[in-house]
Length: 128
Image (tube, rainbow, N blue to C red; front, top):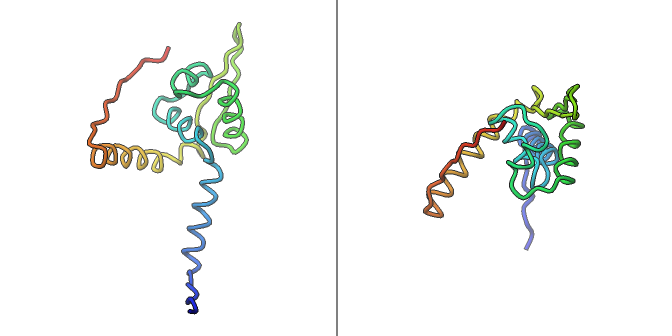
């Protein structure tokens, strides 16, 4: 039995390539969570991120932040303080992911409520 070849238009190919590129940039378990925290909270220090991103090791957080900085999604600012402190914030390019982050958050809330039958409870913590 011969299978028919599926034709994909140029617009579809372009969008699929765009999805792949986005997935490559946000690859892994942690990058999207780090970006989400920086988007919703704003500028954060390394240890604040470590405390907020549950389960991430310091070495992993450091690597992920370097990758995000290299890809122009996160800006690292070393402060002239003693001891030295470093702030992380989204770049304009990183902030352009806001629709993806918001949509993922809304979808996750609906999924949890509709399919798992659980309400999402948000606990706000103040970060010093």
